[in-house]
Amino acid sequence: MAFENLQNLLQFNLRALLPFLLIALVGIGNILFAVTSILPRWSAYEAMTTQIDENQAALDARAAEGDDPEMIDVLQKQIDNARTNLDAASTVFLTEPQANQMLNQLFGYAADSGVEITNLQAQQADQSAPD
Image 1 (cartoon, rainbow, N blue to C red):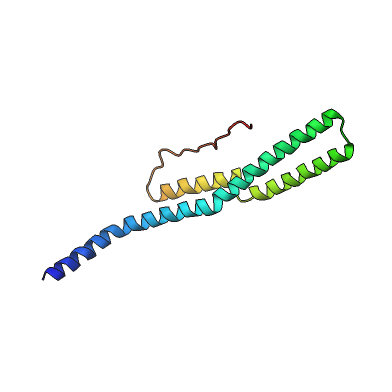
Image 2: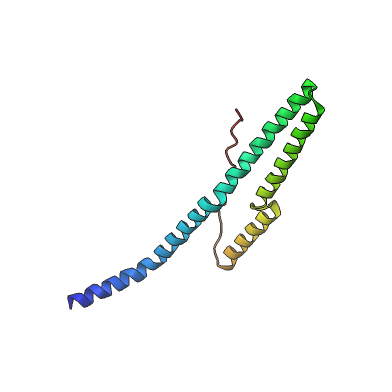
């Protein structure tokens, strides 16, 4: 008798907890995806942007000094190569039209399911000054 009560209690509690466990698993999955896929590529993008800025400053300094034109051409090719790599790295992220379409779909899904989105915020990345 006590075993049957315990079994019924566990089944009821497990059924009550399943939605919360599912939500927690989806949240953990989203966090893991962000950590393993988005953050490394974001770091690479930031590193390439910094490299382009440094190379451009070096090129401007060499041009101002009237340095060897061949060296300036080499630096310009390095900058162009870094910009190409930056463009390739940025294809991972959404373009502005893609982001707008995604938001429109989000609001559409919310309206279809009878939910109203009252507050949606975007945060800018921290743009600290270069050293």
